[in-house]
Image 1 (cartoon, one colour):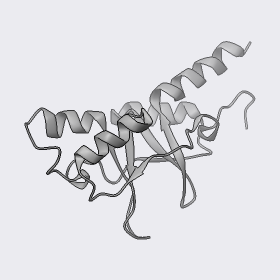
Image 2: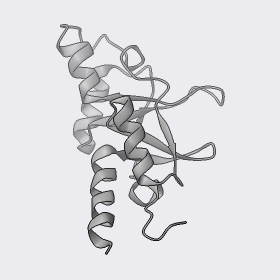
Image 3: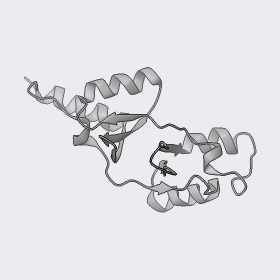
Image 4: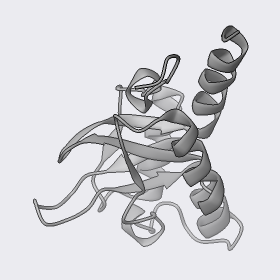
Length: 136
């Protein structure tokens, strides 16, 4: 491992807010407001399923902008699934490249099959810049 390498695990937010895919968008909005977050993880239905993510952007674009009812729309109808996952051991600079290439702002962080948390492009870039600034 090169000196100064920052791993995704070091900037992962481990406090996840999870909702069921059958929850309404209104429930999701209330959960986001309650926890001051802009995304929620959608729980897997079983071991063969994948996690999903719903964001404020999803709600804005797929519900509000097209005049759908938040009370009658289920999260599973607007979520992104499968959610992008990155390894906790991945070098932050490669996670930044991956998210940038895909036009995404967040990814779930895993260690094997275990879900560890969520990482945002903002947190990745800030941590990378901090590492670069600190190097001589």
